[in-house]
Length: 71
Image 1 (cartoon, rainbow, N blue to C red):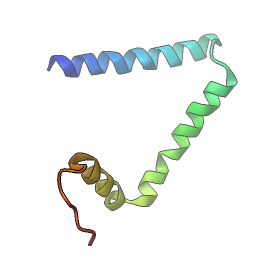
Image 2 (image 1 turned 45 degrees about the horizontal axis):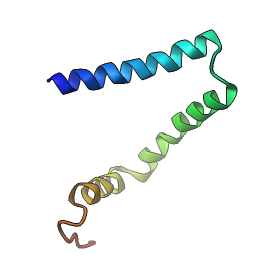
Image 3 (image 1 turned 180 degrees about the vertical axis):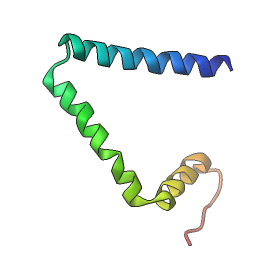
Image 4 (image 1 turned 90 degrees about the vertical axis):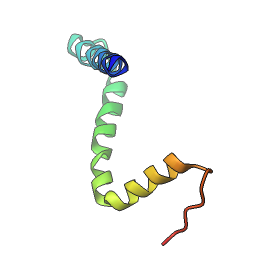
């Protein structure tokens, strides 16, 4: 449970750095555009579907330990 709290604190601190810096005007337009582009790329995952994403997760979790036949 302790590591989960650490991850949440880390994520919130990054979020705070980005949001409050942007509100104060300390972030350049290039960085702001980068985050906007990353947000727009997320729906592509929905287009690929859960099957392709699940396949990537299986490959990542098993890596070279096991042979996974393609079906």
